[in-house]
Length: 76
Image 1 (cartoon, one colour):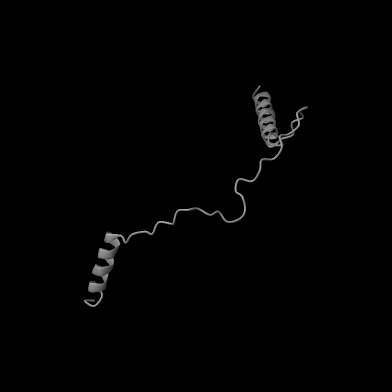
Image 2 (tube, helix red, strand yellow):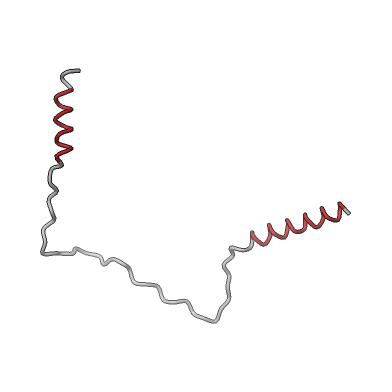
């Protein structure tokens, strides 16, 4: 009885491995035609705008850190 149980378990395991191996084939036959490809998301060329690019302001924390570093370097 134990050998019968082992044989069934081996068959079930083999069946599970073969079905998972063939699961990703992706071959599905339908009568529908596939949709046309979508147009590109971005047009080529230069895009002009009326607004100027904003100039980033100096970060005060960065300025303080750089000043502190410049004053500590000669002390080392």
